[in-house]
Image (cartoon, rainbow, N blue to C red):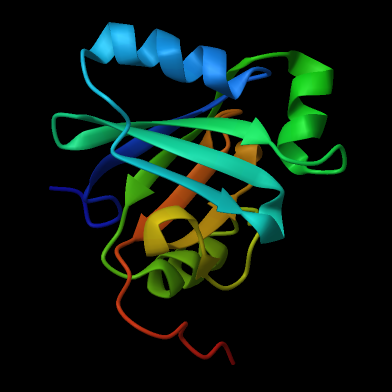
Length: 144
């Protein structure tokens, strides 16, 4: 197993019509969403479908100034990011920063389903927006 990534946690798909996309993925996966949550701080509504030990995350914008709204305006619906499970997001950020990779976050923040998350710039992974996430382990770590 990799020293950096433990697994592919989920793939994030930006969608213009969240309810329509949810209906499509209910048909595709044969199941209802496992989780649905609005993340006010990001202006996004996230809907998760379980697929084996990974997930598909559908992302709809809740306001016109959100990053998802900007993505949709520029690129339309489609793959937004790949999220990798890591043991410790801050440790991973520090390691990747030390390697000279460009980060979008320098410390973890609370994401959907209580996970700690942080993003790396697409240039760090051959043009793919990369999310690092770990299960909720209590309060956000202090960043120094």
